[in-house]
Image 1 (spheres, rainbow, N blue to C red):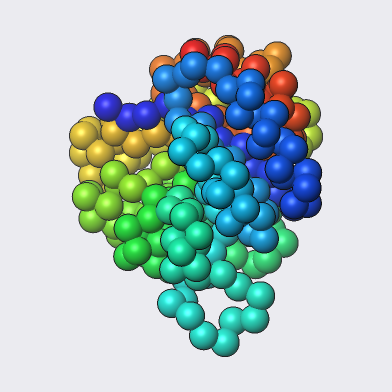
Image 2: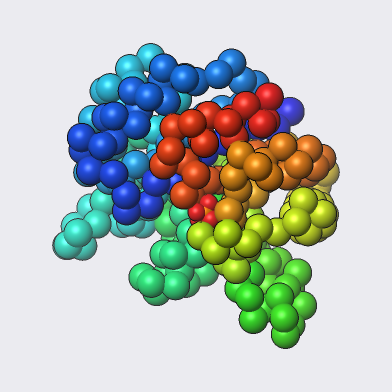
Length: 250
Ligand SMILES: O=C(CO)COP(=O)(O)O
């Protein structure tokens, strides 16, 4: 059975003090939920967040990591460094990493392999840009992103993969894919994985939707059968909004 997941990607927001305040608020207001709840603070605040949350059910995850074990990669963070502070899940392939930091499918495939080699869970992000949706078959774009970074994995590796479909045109724009558009793409993703692997792999992987999820639209998006939760940006920075989104999944 795949899990329901609601994750907050805080991106480059919240300094140490603000991170503590938001986690205190979230912990106090956290509703009972069937979903795994995750937050991704910026790297410098991961260790303190893990310590603060202690045995809380809120999981702290990382926004990025490098593929190398260690070495001369100024400014980068390795899988071992994340594990050493108690973080065992990492977001890889966010569209902002692809767009602003030149992360190609090839680099992402190396990052995924490096994280899996350390037995970490990977939340793999992908999604088409606006031009893709307008001009070419955006299903092909999504399929090739998956294929290039993930389809060389063994079937067993997929127990460690979480997918986050984030259409780039819906990120931070206030424009969200309609629940029907999200469902259509999520069903396509599951079909693509079934063809590359089998139904068991496809049915067990959680596929999250990301892109302007808010309390007002979360219930409808989460009601779709192939949508297993959300990766939330802006709304995860406000405790009441994030809590409302967690409540929306039930
Ligand atoms: O990029 C996102 C999460 O990773 C989505 O961001 P928004 O929810 O702000 O659109």
